[in-house]
Amino acid sequence: MITVSEFTNYMNIPSPISNEMESFIKDCILGAVDEINSYTNRRIVEMNPNHDMTIIITEKTEYYDGYNTNILYLKNYPVVELNPNARNVLQYLKEDESWEDIIQPPDTIGNSVLLLDYGKLRLLKNYKFPEGTKNIKVIYKSGYSAENLPEDLKLVCFEKSGLKFLNSAYGNYQRLGIEFHDLSNQRTKFINIDEKHTKIMDKYRRPTI
Image (cartoon, rainbow, N blue to C red; front, side, top):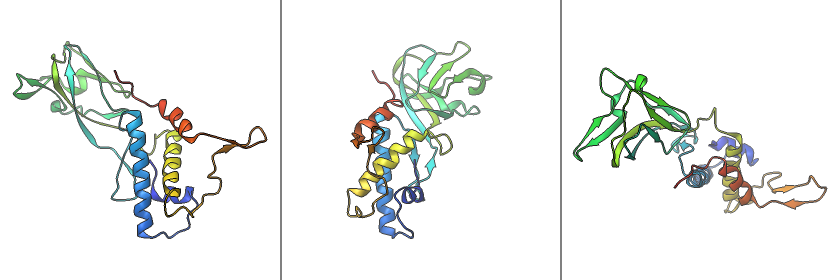
């Protein structure tokens, strides 16, 4: 969600930083991202730990129960791509033995599947997801990019990773204004930072049954 350089700017940490500090900052960011992904019950973002913690978009292979309907809700969103040129990104398990393409020629994923960015997948042309347990396989790309990541989620990542950093041996690196309080009523009102984060993350949480 955030890079090492963004973090050091946010925390007002002077450059250059040591390799040890850079490694620890990455751990703080990855820990914050894991918390956000876990709470929202989906992969909001995926980070590339081998570089400067940039966001990457990867393919996900997921398995679902079929109910002989033409509607499926994917676990992760926003959906970036369901490859329209490959039939094997949408398959069913035939007789518990082999994976078969749901969309058959001359039809294609592009002209037979409607996929909305919030994860709703609808089969067209009378195609159905055969009934079964974990017998539907979907391969797709999803998640926010650096360009469309909501600013409030990015702020949660800054604050969660910043608190992890300050609660460590590097705690002497103080960001100006890191205190979380509200002076709007001409008095200091300390905010429960966990409640603040939960309220924001609730907006992006995937409901489960």
